[in-house]
Amino acid sequence: MRRINTNGVNKESRKAEQLAKLLTEDFSMDLERVGYYLVRNLPMIVFHRFDVLALSAQEEYDKLREEMKGNTHGLRR
Image (cartoon, rainbow, N blue to C red; front, side, top):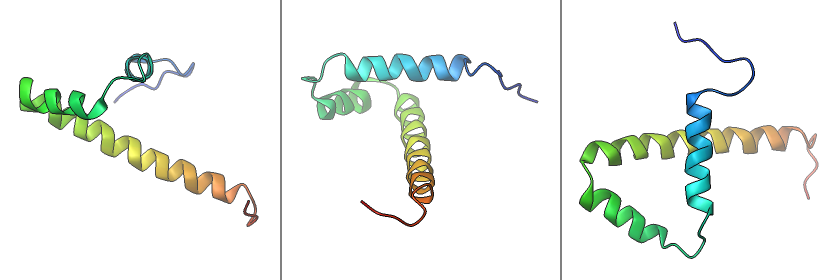
């Protein structure tokens, strides 16, 4: 059974912070080219793991949007 760290810091959250830092330290970086090199120059397992990460992030983003809609009590801006 996997333990959940109660203070909110675990290896996954630290990696997420590192990834966010990489993606935001240079906004002039062409992310499409990064994706090209990710697929062309690295083992396919890297792409598949990134794909899982992206899908998971999209699911959590959708859940967060739904939660935020619920907090408006039906009011829209």
